[in-house]
Image 1 (tube, rainbow, N blue to C red):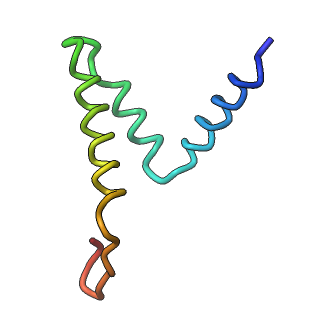
Image 2: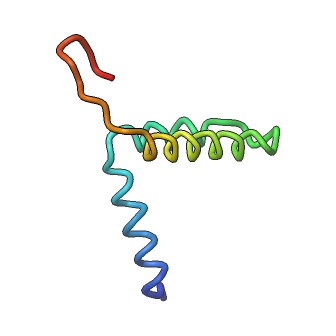
Length: 68
């Protein structure tokens, strides 16, 4: 039987898959070979760093010329 904590984690994961690009990112990640062992961890750290930097950066206004 699944406990409520595991159910909450599952629901959170399913909800994340609905975000734009999440499924593509997950599919690409799973296509990365298991060796070298540290490669996947390095990629996770890079993405986490990018997310943290993005959260700290002030929001930019989008102009007519492109998508920033």
